[in-house]
Image (tube, rainbow, N blue to C red):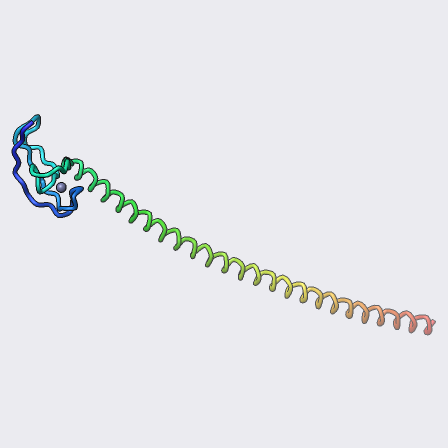
Length: 141
Ligand SMILES: [Zn+2]
């Protein structure tokens, strides 16, 4: 199997020997024009690196999508945090309002008791006056 190659450097991908892989373009073989990552020393090397560039592209695209997913997750987490803070805030407001309602209820009861006491006082006076009128009436007769 004999192939000729046009080489171009690509520093992102490394060969198994640690050297920066280069992009080879197959000139012969089954698919001439196919680009793949290979050892820069090829063919004078025992390295068998053969990674089609398209696969690398797919991997890169998946990594970009993964990063985008992380960003989306981060945004959702921020929204969730915001909503949690809002819920806490609303719960606090609700608690404050319930306390206010309780305090107003207590105040209302105190006022009702005061009215009842005043009514009792008026009733007592009325009864006292009635008693005096009865005594005066019997004494007159
Ligand atoms: Zn190599």
